[in-house]
Image (cartoon, rainbow, N blue to C red; front, side, top):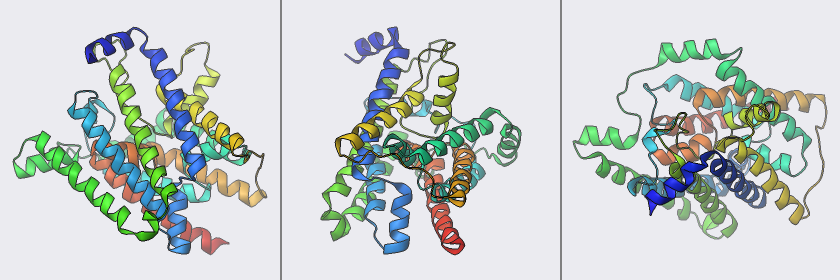
Length: 360
C-alpha cells in the first residue's frame, strides 16, 4: 500500500508538496491564532505572572510531535536520518547556542517568534508583516548572501565530529544497545517526562484550550513529516529531504518565490506552508471577528521590531530553526542540536525580557 502511495506521489511530487504545505500551513495558522499559541508569550507569562500554561502547551506540542515522528519512522513512513537535523556531517554546537540565543532575544523585541508573527500578519497586523519581510531578508543574507562568509567561517571553525547527531544513537552507543531500542527508550522517557510536567499543574489540567493547542500544533508537525516522508525519493534528480514545519528559511524562500515565480512556478513545501499559515490565520481572524489592520505605535517601536526581526533571521539560520522548527520539529527527531537550541531559545527569551524591561 505504501509503495503504491509513494509511486503515485512521485509522479507529481512538486504539486503534492506545494498543496500539502499550503493545507498544513493553513491548519497551523488557524490553530496558532485561535488558541493564542505563542512561544515568546509563554516566556512572558512566566516572567511577568508566573503562569506556565502556555509554556506547557509548547512542551506538549514537542512531546506529541516526538511520539508521532518516531512512530512514523518506525513504520518506515519517513526517514528522519535524511532530514537536515540528522544528516549533517558535524555538530555545530556554537551555531545552536548563539543562534538560539539570538532568536530568543530577537523574538521578544519583535513581539513574537516567526510563527506568531505569521498569525498576526494574517489577522491584519502590518507590523508583523514587515517583521516577516525583514526576517526573511536577513535569513537569506545569512544563508548565501552578505553574511554567509562569516557564518560559514564560524561553522567550520567550531564544528566538532561528534559521530552521532541524535539522542537515540548516542544512548545506544554508550549503553551498547540497538539504536531502535535506544530510540524507543529516549522517546518514551522524554515524552513521559514532558507529559508529567504538563499535567502535574492543576491550572493547566483545568485549561482545555492550552491542552488542545499543544496537541494540535504537535499533530500538524507529525502530519508534515508524513507528507514529506511519503514524497521523499533519494533517486530523484533533486530529492527534497523529509521536513516538517519551520519558519525561518521558508519565510525567505516565500519572498524569493514571489520574485522568481516565472522561473519556479511551484513553491516548495516550506514556502507553501508560509502562505498557508497567513491564509489560515486570516480565516480564523475573520471567522472570530478579530481581523483588524494595525501598525507600529511609534518610531522606537518600529526600530525595536525590525532589530528583533534581523536577529531572528540571522539566529534562525545559525540554529537551523525556530521555536517550531527546532523546539518542536527538530526535537521530534531526537536531534541533540534541537534540544540544545530549545534551551538556548528559552535562555535568550528570558534575557530579552529582562533587557526590554530595563529599557522601558
